[in-house]
Length: 338
Image (cartoon, rainbow, N blue to C red):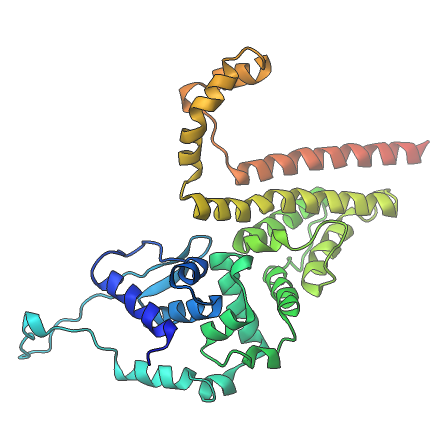
């Protein structure tokens, strides 16, 4: 009897072969596959993993799984006749069969499994489809190993998420030669964190400010920011306040990266398309006469409207925040002189 994941992979493979799903088109997510075929998330993940190993699909961060571009056709060997059109079929190369065998549970894939591979596979799932799509069975399916194999290296899904966060925060570090200017050092801290959240939007969802994650990878960023504020005449509590405000500015904006991806996937509408749908309602509010300031701003924007860019908001927020810190430092130094 053909297992469910294989039947799902066969159907998706047919859609790709017949052009229903073209290169670049988004393939149903693990949750959509699970709902459509009535299977578990792990089964859906395994079906997509089969197509990924065949090179038919690829993970596109913050988009999901999409149909891969077909490889360029190789020219026929000299003197070789082209096969009749009605007999042309796609066959997996022998090496692919060997790779599939190697990945079967109990074979080489089990022997090659490490904690680092488990964590990396989990990060790839979260990057492509969001943290809600993550499961231990899904990680096992992605790695081509038995469902319980990852538990030899990670105790639980919660433990796995902490390891993922530690690895993700540790991907970017800081220069050995520290700039002398405190403002420049805080700018580096903010932009480094922003780049990490951009890579891994799910990170911003993990922990509120009052419950910081005790992770070495995250502490590196805190240590850099705290060192930048050292020696400016601020007391320790104020130093921590400034550090938390800086981190909250980055994290607060980054939360919208994941939420936007989730809403776009759920509604099928881009930001621009959503605004087009909401346009008549917003125009009615602006024209009601009850909100003059809102109407004035909307009117002054004109037909070009407003371009919502999180990167621009991040930079503006950084400037305003650091301008405020500069005033705080000046007041502290002035009070110390008297």
